[in-house]
Length: 188
Ligand code: B4P
Figure (cartoon, rainbow, N blue to C red):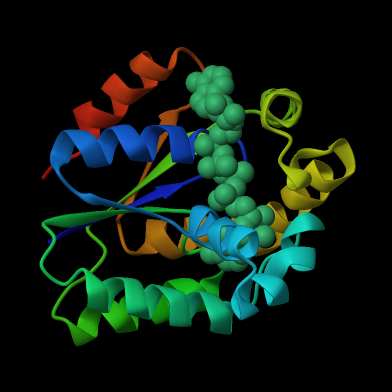
């Protein structure tokens, strides 16, 4: 099983590229952001719990995310690979992911990080706010999401560099060009 983590700040294009990678390689795309948004829109107990946290641009608790991911792995034990988009986002999540995979005789295979400068990230997310009206794409919340990223998620870079799994891909340019660069470095 190929376990690819697509890493990067909010707005880096993880979701955009993860869909294309999953389709091309026949892997399962798992976006924790999409999973949580679906819970919110369906008004489930989990959705009610996380709605205000997400709308403020904060991270949902590690406990909940780990529970969600455990059930994703259990339900998809026969897939050829996963493209993880938006998970892990904290060191604790990364450690728990390693443990979860180990239980099934698996490990993280590769971590690809999309590198995009902050002005471009803010521009993209504010554009999406106009187009899609996502509640966490307002200027104030976007700034908070970037703060959360630098504080909680960016430190994962060293975690994966130490494991020799981490590779950067420049994430500015056309979606197709970035996709080609990603495909060139994915080694299934
Ligand atoms: P996510 O849904 O993961 O939100 P994101 O980081 O903004 O990534 P997204 O996939 O939306 O952006 P993308 O780069 O694809 O998370 C939302 C919230 O859920 C978090 O804030 C948190 O509260 C919660 N959450 C999720 N996972 C969690 C976890 N593990 N732990 C705790 N909490 C968690 O695209 C951005 C925009 O750029 C799009 O409009 C796209 O069309 C555009 N774009 C993409 N590529 C482009 C390119 N090359 N050029 C121009 N525009 C481009």
